[in-house]
Image (cartoon, rainbow, N blue to C red; front, side, top):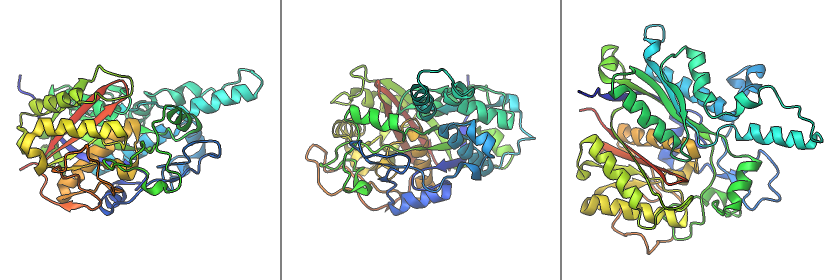
Length: 416
């Protein structure tokens, strides 16, 4: 069977460093930090008092008050970013086959704030079960693609992938395969997350996953730096329009790049820690390269998972050295989480967008906040430290890993 070719024709972003695609790219290019003291709730009793919140996002700028109350923030973010991606793609929705248009979305947690608020309300109400009738439909992770499809009438495959921080990367790989196999012409894909909440911050603090650099939050996310002490929690969404190549070409669509492969693997090692030798990460990149039908030396840029955790960063870079050998030193490697923080289930989507924009602009965004060399990291690797670097990017890879040992990897190629 001849697989269909798949291209990216639209993108939308809602991130801690920009509330649309252009603002997001400008923030990446300029090395902007999205980390700041939390404004959503009182952090006095919390170990970590900062996060990468969205700045200036007002729900009623996008929804009427009644509609906004029915949507958890993660679903609001999904609708806003997907709307931008659809407009960016130039799709004329009245001219496409909506039975062959799907929505495959990623969310690692879903409506955490809704769940938290309803349970707190129950407890404060003396145990009287007076839950909001929208509690369940606001909370469930699959409601984001459901709302996108309802709004636009898309009647193809519609579901959410949940694989912790790999969720939106999994969603994109599923979208790729649905189109490759001829089941869809167009898929709206990506991911959203809104876990900067009392429960989210408290939970991640309890497992010692977050940075506690409260004295300088703007520099707390410092992937690959010897003084890194955990990740910074972020929120937002990224959306991509994946489209069958001939379908896109027939309508004269703008094409960002071709999605040439996706790989998956499992660490099968620990609930939260990566394998110290990066065995699962080696395998997922190998699987991705094989799926794409390319050689390691064709890769120009890797957007790493790079969360700024002591164990994870080293394991991933060891794996890159093993997979790419001598060519590893020729690759521009970066971690955009240094700027956006970790968007959990939305991370794969916004980092894929970064990779695609790096390809478009021939500029690799920096890994900011690096000051102290980690002796456990190969010094020959180009980690694109502190300043964006110009280079032609013809092939870009994006890595995303999740608690539970879930590994996902995508690779994109510029159309010649």
